[in-house]
Image (cartoon, rainbow, N blue to C red; front, side, top):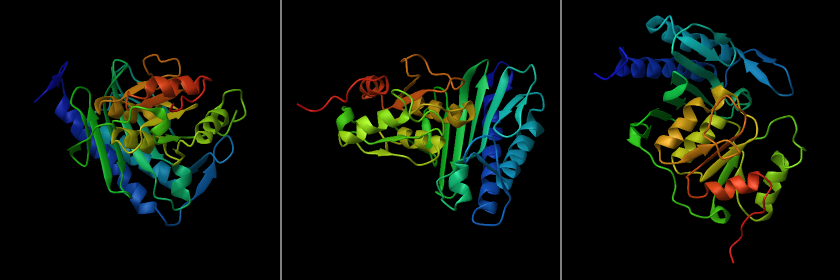
Length: 272
C-alpha cells in the first residue's frame, strides 16, 4: 500500500472514487425529474436542488474518512482547516445542461496536497464515462488507459471552448478568438461542461481546449487528467497552470504553441 507522508494513497483513491460515485448517484436520481432551480449572481448562473444534494453526498463521504481535510466546493465554498490536503469539488459541472435535460454534465473532484494536484476523478454517469487520474500513474477512462491525440497542426484540429457570460466583446476576448478559428474552417465545439471538455481532450476526442474564465472546481481534476494523458496545460501566458487563475489552454501538446498564439491575438497559421 502506497503512503504519502503517513496517509495511504490507496485510501485516498478509495475515498475519492466513493465520493464521485455518491455525487453521480444524485445526478442520476434527479436528471429529467422535478427539482428546484434558482439563480446565483449573473445571467443563467443556475444552481439546482440536485447540485446541493450531490455536494452534500460528496462532502459526507470525504468527511467520514478525513474530517480534518480542507474542502473547496462550488456551492458551499471553503471549509477551512490547516490540513495539507484540499478536496476541490464541482457537484454538477454543466448545470445548465442538466437543468434542460441535456446529458452532457458530470461530477468533478480534484485532490490537492500542499498546493499540488495529486488525484482527480470525473464521472459522467449519463454518458457512462468514469475518469480517474493519479499524478505519475496515467489517466483512465472506465479503467482503460487513455492518451491525447496526435494532430500536429492547429488548422486540422478539432477544438472545444466555453464562453463566459461577461466580457464577450472584450478586445481579443472569447468571441474574437472563436471568430478567427471558425473563419479558417477549424471546428470549435461548445459543450457546456468544462470538465467534460478536459476529459475529451485527455481521451483524444478533441485536440485542444481554451477558455477565458474558469473556477478551480471546473478544472482541478481535468487538467491533471490531460497532463497524465500526455498533453499540456498552461495559462494564456504559457506558464505552469494553476486552477486558481481564470485562463486555460489545454492541448495534446503538439498544437499548444499555435493555439496559444491565436488566443493571445495572433493569426491562425494556415497551410501553404
